[in-house]
Image 1 (cartoon, helix red, strand yellow):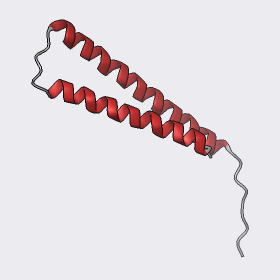
Image 2 (image 1 turned 90 degrees about the horizontal axis):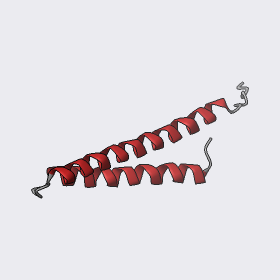
Image 3 (image 1 turned 45 degrees about the vertical axis):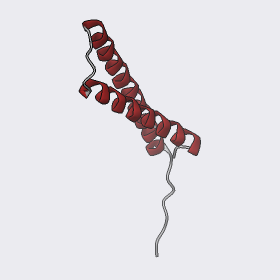
Image 4 (image 1 turned 60 degrees about the vertical axis):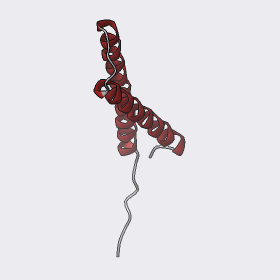
Amino acid sequence: MSTPKNAMEVREKFEECGHSFSLFVELCTSDIPLNKRSKLALFEYGKSRMQAYENAESLLRAQGEEATELAVPMLRTG
């Protein structure tokens, strides 16, 4: 299973992504007038945040795969 350090790293990455997505949605839905250049920058910010989320997801999946590859001793019952 993943170590607490790795679990905390994944948690922090997902929390950061959540905050970033909240900011992105807030900016997209605000009444702030944006020119074309600002809209393009906001779009690029959204794409970079999506990439960060996908990276965090990949890290979580990799840790899950590592955990399933570990040998689990069979316990005898009865």
